[in-house]
Image 1 (cartoon, helix red, strand yellow):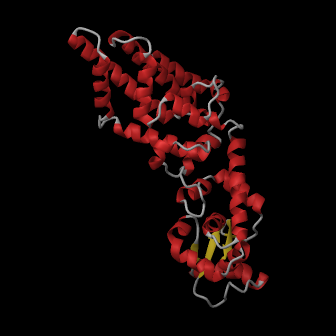
Image 2: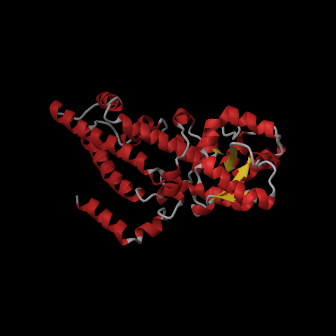
Image 3: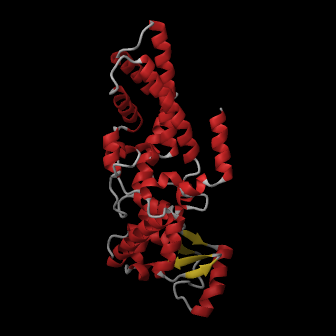
Length: 339
């Protein structure tokens, strides 16, 4: 996976969608700018000075990457907005690039300026800013997650209910293996791996190596809620299928017969959305939050959306200990238990 900010839109968006990192970057980088309509903005001349490039270079990037820059805050001021910025700054501060006669003025928000810095390849200054960005993003994620990105999945308010339900589905599946499959006890590990490979293309050993889990770390305790839900859906459906077929045959299944059920389940169109979602969430979040690459899932990687940063780093996210001390969370778990 290409993580070069100058060439990877996913890598750029993983910085720009992280509002906590953006706030720290604005404080740390101290790039100046103008206060306008409730935010910090930069004229093209200021952007050129900050990045140590010519205004023509800025124009070239606006021409080649205008859609991306506009999505992140670059805009053209006209009419009343243009008049207001002139009234605020032209006479008072004599900014020569805010012409009193030009019909429009392009401005960059702080976010758009960072976006531009991630695109510019001609400047050592832009390269330095990119380096600081990456350092600060890593520091912010570590600080917000309590320094334990391995278990950042547990900060999601959906994690505990998903883990609790999945444990029940897991029990149904292991009981089905016990009761309906003619095979030694190695079957539990073998068929767990087969399900993992169907859901996210890795077996237990591969997954643990990629995340560099310690021997005491439990594999499923590091998985996101969506991944646990996909596994649980697969396990409970497979358990029901094993029971039905075993009862129809009047005997336990052979491994070959169970493998046929697995293949049918893997191609079931009802499960495909859960599997696709699990692969996308695992590969994308692990790259952005844990800095690890699932090579077999590389084609599923997307930029982490803004609401995921809120979900895992924001005010609603809490450590597992805090969640277990919360009466509302415990009530949810009790309702799941009583089902």
